[in-house]
Length: 408
Image 1 (cartoon, one colour):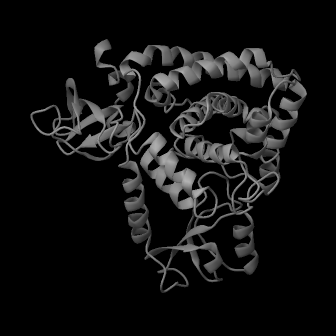
Image 2 (cartoon, rainbow, N blue to C red; image 1 turned 60 degrees about the horizontal axis):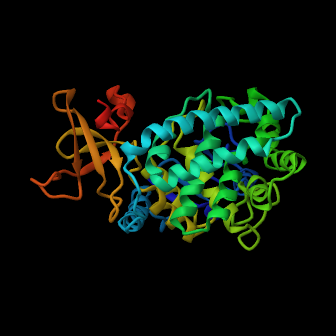
């Protein structure tokens, strides 16, 4: 039987089934092993790992600990309750914004690539080049956040570093918008999101893209990137306190287990706390050389679970409302057996979006694409229900080509 425990409950003789630390590389070669010494337990705790899954059939048990299924069910109920709350209205539809968002994505990705290349050559970051891109991203988010965030869910492994920076900027702007933060602060947060990983330009590619576990020495190099990025941006000049703070502190955690300054919840700024959530969410939902990205729903459950120790619990709840269980661009399976891509979030409930259906899992073939509104009853454009997220690889389909039915 698999159970979920806190790392404070670890004892020698327990069989570790999973080290629940999806946003970072843990200090062990394997995720499944039996604890043989107190040094191993200290190593787990010092890495900031709090939630651990143990296999009671293979090692020491914790009698009153919940099973993994029980722990997940509890979190699921809380997350679903949060996702049922109303969200901010959009100015235009996803279809109307998609063309502009596509251009912004391409331009922003190219800009981040140029910035990183310039930094590697010893050049400073030119604020005049970066600022207009943040303004364009912000304008797109204000028109409809789903278009750009939906496009950015698809990342090439080779371009991950650049696309991740654009995604963090986009999600952070959307997060600020949902929370009603003023325009200037939102712009500064977006700038911090776009530049937060500038220090990774100094990390060797063989470490940055390593497929296997990092050694202690390699992880130490990775952990230098917030400070390196901060130093680069300070030397560049003209970059304000908010982007500098986000760059330096987006890896801090409220229990003091983060880096580089081991700040606790009383020291980490609000925007750095927001950036930490966004950074982790985008990282764990993206395919990397060493892991397959998880679904948005699973990622939000993890963010919510980890907020017990690592993230601001109130901000974690607000982020669930910001991105939703079923973000635009997500492939979902409906009760009818049809596959569809989420095309628009519903303004009164994130659990009942508009979905463009295009494939039947019963006939294993494409069907005439059409949009259904899951908030409406049968006969009024609705009458179906989402069963779960689905993998594009499982059916070898590209849901993004059905996002804008007007273009077909």
